Amino acid sequence: MAIVIRLDDLLHSRRMTLTELAEQIDITLANLSILKTGKARAIRFSTLAAICAALDCQPGDLLEFDPGAEAEEDPAP
Image 1 (cartoon, rainbow, N blue to C red):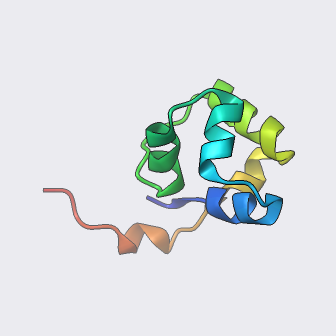
Image 2 (image 1 turned 45 degrees about the vertical axis):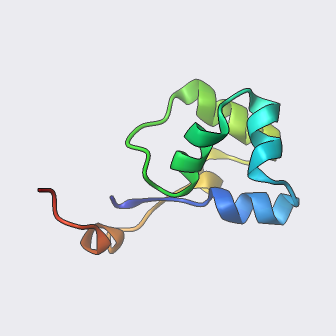
């Protein structure tokens, strides 16, 4: 996918763990981990808003368009 998730970078710069963020925004660690690893296919605006509020960031700090990332994916079966 050409959308890259920068959650790991934001967590590192805020000195926050994924577990702490999950507890703060009331989302399961498993779902947040799927987002962090870039395996999520969608994100609810309410989840995006909660992450941005907890990390004091903008959606553009979390999501990045990288057209080169499309070529890195495995082709669909």
